[in-house]
Image (cartoon, rainbow, N blue to C red; front, side, top):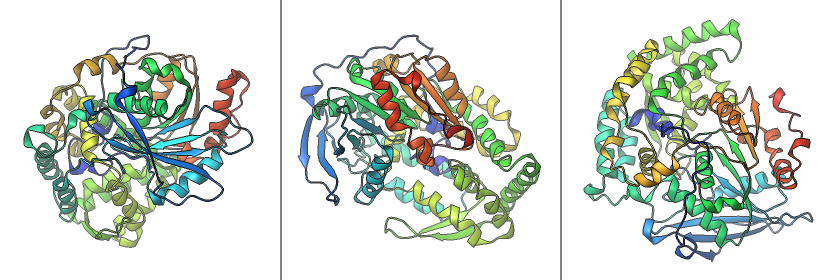
Length: 503
């Protein structure tokens, strides 16, 4: 599942639409070039012993990237899985994870997954992984204990949506406003900072040319990197679940939520759609009047979560479960379990929902800082009109614009924002992967983007959701062949049709 702030959609701020909030600046036709002044000398790379066990058959190196002190002094963990196969290509692949606020998932317990992922991808080149500023194992870990405590505590109560939003807003202001002295510095975060970090990392690793694989928010970061003059070193990009620079303002959220529910209701065909839709709304009404209480074990060895499941939390859980086609299949059974009051039928989706939301590798303060920097000013009247178009959801959407943290944060970095938050065309070979059921970065975003960029090869998987490569072994197998075809100039002869139509 993508590392997005799914649950905190209702605990705080302005909904999952805030995850998507971004610039609505007018399009521009060519890539804006942002120059860095002596960026290479401002970063250092320090080799370190790896913090995980490495199988004897693998070659892996680890390091810490020390970032530019002028934008905050961070130490970012880096892992390089070296290619040892007879056929070796010198141009590596760097992975840009989702978020913002999400890590590269390179904890000790995560690396077995990456080793298997690397073997399956057939890259024949090095793979570079890292944690972004403020996430994962990066230091300093600028977080907010009060926010984490609030998030846990409010779960144990049957709090109204308005109360969660109101109290969450006040607490978040105390965490992220520099004037409150909580120790968090929002100005040190942003896609422009992370783009420079990536370019500096690849230069310090002494790679002359490289390739990019990005998922969800990582695709937005990849587009920001393309706006740097140093992006000339990039040979190709693979963009999975595209989050464009000019999409996703808050006013789009009601339509996205409505579309996600419509896709859910029709998932098993039109014959079952009406019954599932009826039962979904009945389940919401039941939880509004009669909540269910759960104890959810923590996957990270912490105290278990005490969870009161009410109507708006249930809606959030259903939306989160629609990210992946496998969990989406379980939602009808979840709805029936709620109607019957069967705790055992709710727990299989509730447990991952809560644990993903409280993943310690994810930093919600970083999420807010980056999104607020890159969000346009909210027009409440426009939002109200858009929310009113979906009256069934109005109880869960109409208040969201009243509890937006972003107007309280200073708009630092305006020059960076104006130079880099616009759509543009580029001539780099790019493979665009999209899930037809993706609720948060919908297929039509990718279709519009691909239509305006002739260098893009777009493959849609109609029955998949968010994060195509993470959901499909077949899509995973596209990575190595695409990069090699892009490097040899043979994309026209590359066939990627062997599985996407059957997904």
